[in-house]
Image (cartoon, rainbow, N blue to C red; front, side):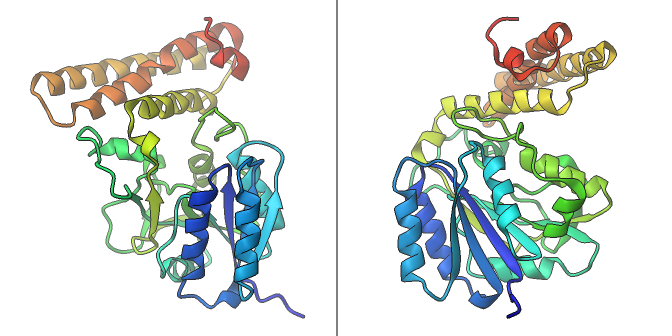
Length: 323
């Protein structure tokens, strides 16, 4: 019997059973023929009722092709990579467990691969505050630190810049590309309490550099649920710190000349961001905190560069409180 699966939808999940349930319910409402896609739930060592939620969903939706996998290697990239290896479809879609898709999401994703040169597509991640009051300081670009993503394009648009690349909460890649370019890097994503980031954009950057087209699809929408704890500045600083460490790893090069180059680059960028922040603060710009965070995240990289200069790019040294 020929397998008709065209798309594999991979959902890595860790201790967020309630959100996973909402995501699965949204997938059950897709306006897409269920015979063309499979859903792969990758449980990354959850200690809540994720397993039970998954099997209850499988039982109550017999017309859907749903698989539950347990991935014991901790980390979002490990979970995604396990899903890729188990996937049957030639197109692989990635969702976060807290990102329920719109009913036309998958139809629009499939349309995005309109030509063979398209290797990756992605769409908006619209933040769903679930009736919570959004803080006044969380109105600008900082929403990107809680997985908000949208670009000012009304039609499918090719992307070439790192800052524009789609996020793993709403992204699809041709499966064959993983055989060509490798899987997600496991040193650039969340693992337990460590909130490293950029594993998804690094993968997309590889795809783009290899000559594949990366397309933004404005109608392929997911709704990213914002948990209450993500509305605190402490969470924003935590994510910002993870991004700073991720940038150090991304630009790792043991040659002192390269370390000094990036050190000088960070110093210059931090200085410019500091001036911008001071101007914004003194002029009482409503979104001055955005400017402060840009400065703070770059400034965090400077002591990490010093560590790298003396100790190399060993993650244990980078994360150590000592220089």
